[in-house]
Image (cartoon, rainbow, N blue to C red; front, side, top):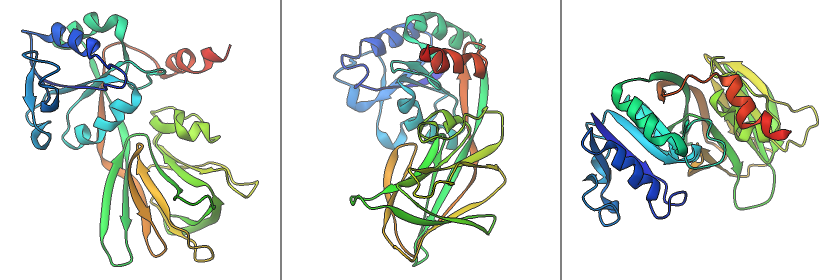
Length: 284
Protein backbone atom coordinates (compact mmCIF):
# COMPACT_ATOMS: atom_id res chain seq x y z
CA UNK A 1 0.00 0.00 0.00
CA UNK A 2 1.37 3.41 -1.02
CA UNK A 3 0.10 6.39 0.96
CA UNK A 4 0.72 10.07 0.33
CA UNK A 5 0.63 12.08 3.57
CA UNK A 6 -0.17 15.79 3.30
CA UNK A 7 0.07 17.80 6.56
CA UNK A 8 -1.14 21.34 7.19
CA UNK A 9 1.67 23.00 9.12
CA UNK A 10 -0.62 25.79 10.28
CA UNK A 11 -2.57 23.11 12.17
CA UNK A 12 0.46 20.96 12.98
CA UNK A 13 3.33 23.46 13.31
CA UNK A 14 5.84 21.06 14.87
CA UNK A 15 4.53 18.13 12.79
CA UNK A 16 3.95 16.12 15.97
CA UNK A 17 0.67 14.66 14.68
CA UNK A 18 2.25 13.96 11.30
CA UNK A 19 5.11 12.11 12.98
CA UNK A 20 2.57 10.13 15.01
CA UNK A 21 0.73 9.14 11.82
CA UNK A 22 3.97 8.17 10.08
CA UNK A 23 4.89 6.08 13.10
CA UNK A 24 1.58 4.21 12.85
CA UNK A 25 2.23 3.49 9.17
CA UNK A 26 5.93 2.62 9.51
CA UNK A 27 6.78 -0.84 8.19
CA UNK A 28 3.18 -1.43 7.09
CA UNK A 29 2.95 0.75 3.98
CA UNK A 30 5.07 2.79 1.60
CA UNK A 31 4.63 6.35 2.82
CA UNK A 32 5.49 9.54 0.92
CA UNK A 33 5.51 13.25 1.70
CA UNK A 34 6.46 16.33 -0.29
CA UNK A 35 10.20 16.77 -0.68
CA UNK A 36 10.07 20.13 1.13
CA UNK A 37 9.52 18.19 4.39
CA UNK A 38 12.77 16.26 4.01
CA UNK A 39 14.61 18.12 6.76
CA UNK A 40 11.63 18.15 9.15
CA UNK A 41 10.75 14.49 8.67
CA UNK A 42 14.16 12.84 8.17
CA UNK A 43 14.07 9.14 7.33
CA UNK A 44 10.35 8.90 8.19
CA UNK A 45 9.02 8.68 4.64
CA UNK A 46 9.89 8.77 0.98
CA UNK A 47 10.03 12.20 -0.65
CA UNK A 48 8.36 13.31 -3.87
CA UNK A 49 8.56 16.52 -5.90
CA UNK A 50 5.43 18.46 -6.82
CA UNK A 51 5.23 17.24 -10.43
CA UNK A 52 4.86 13.58 -9.45
CA UNK A 53 3.50 13.87 -5.92
CA UNK A 54 0.40 11.75 -6.58
CA UNK A 55 2.00 9.25 -8.97
CA UNK A 56 1.43 5.61 -8.03
CA UNK A 57 -0.43 6.48 -4.82
CA UNK A 58 -3.19 4.23 -3.47
CA UNK A 59 -4.50 6.65 -0.82
CA UNK A 60 -4.08 10.26 0.22
CA UNK A 61 -4.00 11.00 3.96
CA UNK A 62 -4.29 14.66 4.95
CA UNK A 63 -3.77 16.12 8.42
CA UNK A 64 -5.60 19.39 9.04
CA UNK A 65 -9.14 20.69 8.74
CA UNK A 66 -11.68 20.37 5.96
CA UNK A 67 -9.84 23.07 4.02
CA UNK A 68 -6.73 20.91 3.90
CA UNK A 69 -8.73 18.01 2.51
CA UNK A 70 -10.46 20.25 -0.03
CA UNK A 71 -7.10 21.51 -1.27
CA UNK A 72 -6.11 17.95 -2.21
CA UNK A 73 -9.55 16.62 -3.16
CA UNK A 74 -9.69 17.84 -6.78
CA UNK A 75 -6.34 16.37 -7.78
CA UNK A 76 -7.15 13.11 -5.97
CA UNK A 77 -10.56 12.93 -7.68
CA UNK A 78 -9.15 13.51 -11.16
CA UNK A 79 -6.65 10.69 -10.56
CA UNK A 80 -9.36 8.47 -8.96
CA UNK A 81 -7.43 8.25 -5.67
CA UNK A 82 -9.39 7.83 -2.40
CA UNK A 83 -8.73 10.43 0.28
CA UNK A 84 -9.11 10.49 4.07
CA UNK A 85 -8.50 13.23 6.61
CA UNK A 86 -7.35 13.41 10.22
CA UNK A 87 -9.17 16.38 11.73
CA UNK A 88 -6.89 18.95 13.34
CA UNK A 89 -9.40 21.74 12.70
CA UNK A 90 -12.77 22.68 14.16
CA UNK A 91 -15.75 21.00 12.48
CA UNK A 92 -14.33 18.15 10.45
CA UNK A 93 -17.27 17.31 8.19
CA UNK A 94 -14.87 15.90 5.58
CA UNK A 95 -11.77 15.15 7.67
CA UNK A 96 -13.51 12.42 9.59
CA UNK A 97 -10.81 10.90 11.82
CA UNK A 98 -10.32 12.71 15.13
CA UNK A 99 -6.70 12.97 16.29
CA UNK A 100 -7.49 11.08 19.51
CA UNK A 101 -8.44 8.00 17.50
CA UNK A 102 -5.66 8.22 14.91
CA UNK A 103 -3.87 4.97 15.73
CA UNK A 104 -6.98 2.79 15.79
CA UNK A 105 -8.34 4.38 12.60
CA UNK A 106 -5.09 3.93 10.68
CA UNK A 107 -5.01 0.28 11.74
CA UNK A 108 -8.45 -0.12 10.15
CA UNK A 109 -7.29 1.66 7.01
CA UNK A 110 -4.30 -0.67 6.65
CA UNK A 111 -6.54 -3.70 7.27
CA UNK A 112 -8.98 -2.60 4.56
CA UNK A 113 -11.73 -2.07 7.13
CA UNK A 114 -13.36 0.99 5.55
CA UNK A 115 -15.89 2.10 2.97
CA UNK A 116 -15.59 4.64 0.17
CA UNK A 117 -18.26 7.30 -0.25
CA UNK A 118 -18.44 9.07 -3.59
CA UNK A 119 -19.35 12.75 -3.57
CA UNK A 120 -20.35 14.67 -6.67
CA UNK A 121 -18.26 17.66 -7.72
CA UNK A 122 -18.71 20.85 -9.72
CA UNK A 123 -16.99 21.60 -13.00
CA UNK A 124 -16.62 25.31 -13.76
CA UNK A 125 -15.42 26.67 -17.10
CA UNK A 126 -14.72 30.33 -17.66
CA UNK A 127 -14.48 31.31 -21.30
CA UNK A 128 -13.09 34.72 -22.16
CA UNK A 129 -14.29 36.95 -24.96
CA UNK A 130 -11.37 35.76 -27.14
CA UNK A 131 -12.41 32.12 -26.68
CA UNK A 132 -9.72 31.08 -24.21
CA UNK A 133 -11.13 28.65 -21.63
CA UNK A 134 -10.05 27.71 -18.10
CA UNK A 135 -11.58 24.74 -16.30
CA UNK A 136 -11.51 23.82 -12.63
CA UNK A 137 -13.27 21.36 -10.32
CA UNK A 138 -14.64 21.82 -6.80
CA UNK A 139 -16.00 19.51 -4.13
CA UNK A 140 -17.60 22.24 -1.98
CA UNK A 141 -18.30 25.31 -4.05
CA UNK A 142 -17.37 27.81 -6.70
CA UNK A 143 -17.60 31.41 -5.48
CA UNK A 144 -17.84 34.62 -7.46
CA UNK A 145 -16.88 37.57 -5.27
CA UNK A 146 -16.08 41.25 -5.52
CA UNK A 147 -12.71 42.30 -6.83
CA UNK A 148 -10.52 44.75 -4.93
CA UNK A 149 -13.24 47.43 -5.08
CA UNK A 150 -16.11 47.52 -2.59
CA UNK A 151 -18.91 47.88 -5.14
CA UNK A 152 -21.60 45.31 -5.88
CA UNK A 153 -21.37 42.89 -8.82
CA UNK A 154 -24.14 42.72 -11.44
CA UNK A 155 -24.57 39.21 -12.86
CA UNK A 156 -27.07 37.61 -15.21
CA UNK A 157 -27.89 33.99 -14.36
CA UNK A 158 -29.24 31.37 -16.77
CA UNK A 159 -30.25 27.75 -16.12
CA UNK A 160 -30.26 25.47 -19.17
CA UNK A 161 -30.24 28.60 -21.33
CA UNK A 162 -33.29 30.10 -19.61
CA UNK A 163 -32.84 33.54 -18.04
CA UNK A 164 -33.44 33.45 -14.27
CA UNK A 165 -32.63 36.94 -13.01
CA UNK A 166 -30.05 39.68 -12.84
CA UNK A 167 -28.37 39.70 -9.44
CA UNK A 168 -26.78 42.72 -7.82
CA UNK A 169 -24.86 41.33 -4.86
CA UNK A 170 -21.51 40.96 -3.14
CA UNK A 171 -21.16 37.71 -5.02
CA UNK A 172 -22.62 34.30 -5.75
CA UNK A 173 -22.01 30.82 -4.35
CA UNK A 174 -22.66 27.71 -6.43
CA UNK A 175 -22.41 24.79 -4.05
CA UNK A 176 -22.73 21.03 -4.10
CA UNK A 177 -24.68 19.29 -1.33
CA UNK A 178 -21.29 18.65 0.32
CA UNK A 179 -20.69 22.40 0.30
CA UNK A 180 -24.17 23.23 1.61
CA UNK A 181 -22.83 23.20 5.20
CA UNK A 182 -20.01 25.61 4.33
CA UNK A 183 -20.07 29.14 2.88
CA UNK A 184 -23.51 28.69 1.31
CA UNK A 185 -25.04 27.97 4.71
CA UNK A 186 -23.34 31.04 6.21
CA UNK A 187 -24.90 33.11 3.41
CA UNK A 188 -28.38 31.84 4.31
CA UNK A 189 -28.59 28.79 2.07
CA UNK A 190 -30.24 25.50 3.12
CA UNK A 191 -28.51 22.37 4.35
CA UNK A 192 -28.82 19.56 1.80
CA UNK A 193 -28.24 15.87 2.33
CA UNK A 194 -25.15 14.79 0.29
CA UNK A 195 -27.22 12.05 -1.37
CA UNK A 196 -29.48 14.66 -3.01
CA UNK A 197 -28.04 15.23 -6.49
CA UNK A 198 -28.36 18.97 -6.82
CA UNK A 199 -26.64 22.35 -6.91
CA UNK A 200 -27.38 25.41 -4.79
CA UNK A 201 -27.19 28.93 -6.20
CA UNK A 202 -26.90 31.31 -3.26
CA UNK A 203 -26.43 35.08 -3.64
CA UNK A 204 -24.15 36.83 -1.13
CA UNK A 205 -25.83 39.89 0.43
CA UNK A 206 -28.17 40.47 -2.53
CA UNK A 207 -29.65 43.92 -3.09
CA UNK A 208 -33.11 42.49 -3.89
CA UNK A 209 -35.13 41.34 -0.88
CA UNK A 210 -36.65 38.39 -2.74
CA UNK A 211 -33.32 36.89 -3.84
CA UNK A 212 -32.98 33.50 -2.21
CA UNK A 213 -31.12 30.24 -2.82
CA UNK A 214 -32.25 28.29 -5.87
CA UNK A 215 -31.80 24.50 -5.76
CA UNK A 216 -31.47 22.84 -9.18
CA UNK A 217 -30.95 19.23 -10.33
CA UNK A 218 -27.39 18.12 -10.98
CA UNK A 219 -28.08 17.65 -14.71
CA UNK A 220 -28.63 21.39 -15.14
CA UNK A 221 -26.14 23.75 -16.73
CA UNK A 222 -25.75 27.10 -14.98
CA UNK A 223 -24.40 30.06 -16.95
CA UNK A 224 -23.36 33.44 -15.58
CA UNK A 225 -22.22 36.65 -17.24
CA UNK A 226 -21.36 40.11 -16.00
CA UNK A 227 -24.30 42.43 -16.58
CA UNK A 228 -23.68 45.19 -19.14
CA UNK A 229 -25.36 47.81 -16.93
CA UNK A 230 -22.52 47.79 -14.41
CA UNK A 231 -19.63 45.84 -15.95
CA UNK A 232 -17.46 45.47 -12.85
CA UNK A 233 -15.08 42.53 -12.80
CA UNK A 234 -15.17 39.83 -10.13
CA UNK A 235 -12.96 37.01 -8.86
CA UNK A 236 -13.73 33.28 -9.07
CA UNK A 237 -12.43 30.73 -6.56
CA UNK A 238 -12.97 26.96 -6.43
CA UNK A 239 -12.96 25.46 -2.93
CA UNK A 240 -11.24 28.65 -1.77
CA UNK A 241 -8.37 28.32 -4.24
CA UNK A 242 -7.34 30.43 -7.19
CA UNK A 243 -8.20 34.00 -8.13
CA UNK A 244 -9.48 33.85 -11.69
CA UNK A 245 -10.72 37.22 -12.94
CA UNK A 246 -14.30 37.28 -14.24
CA UNK A 247 -14.90 40.27 -16.53
CA UNK A 248 -17.45 41.67 -18.95
CA UNK A 249 -17.54 39.48 -22.06
CA UNK A 250 -16.57 36.31 -20.14
CA UNK A 251 -18.97 33.41 -19.68
CA UNK A 252 -18.91 31.18 -16.61
CA UNK A 253 -20.51 27.75 -17.09
CA UNK A 254 -21.09 25.33 -14.24
CA UNK A 255 -22.22 21.72 -14.42
CA UNK A 256 -21.64 18.39 -12.75
CA UNK A 257 -18.03 17.26 -12.95
CA UNK A 258 -17.12 13.99 -14.62
CA UNK A 259 -15.06 13.25 -11.50
CA UNK A 260 -16.19 12.25 -8.02
CA UNK A 261 -14.36 12.72 -4.76
CA UNK A 262 -13.81 9.32 -3.13
CA UNK A 263 -13.92 9.85 0.63
CA UNK A 264 -12.68 7.00 2.80
CA UNK A 265 -14.99 6.35 5.74
CA UNK A 266 -13.40 4.49 8.63
CA UNK A 267 -16.44 4.86 10.87
CA UNK A 268 -20.07 4.35 9.99
CA UNK A 269 -21.50 7.81 10.54
CA UNK A 270 -24.83 9.07 9.24
CA UNK A 271 -25.02 12.59 7.82
CA UNK A 272 -27.71 13.65 10.29
CA UNK A 273 -25.91 12.39 13.36
CA UNK A 274 -22.78 14.19 12.15
CA UNK A 275 -24.85 17.31 11.50
CA UNK A 276 -26.11 17.25 15.08
CA UNK A 277 -22.67 16.59 16.52
CA UNK A 278 -20.76 19.13 14.44
CA UNK A 279 -23.28 21.94 14.01
CA UNK A 280 -26.73 21.72 15.59
CA UNK A 281 -25.57 20.25 18.91
CA UNK A 282 -23.11 23.12 19.39
CA UNK A 283 -25.92 25.65 19.36
CA UNK A 284 -27.20 24.46 22.77
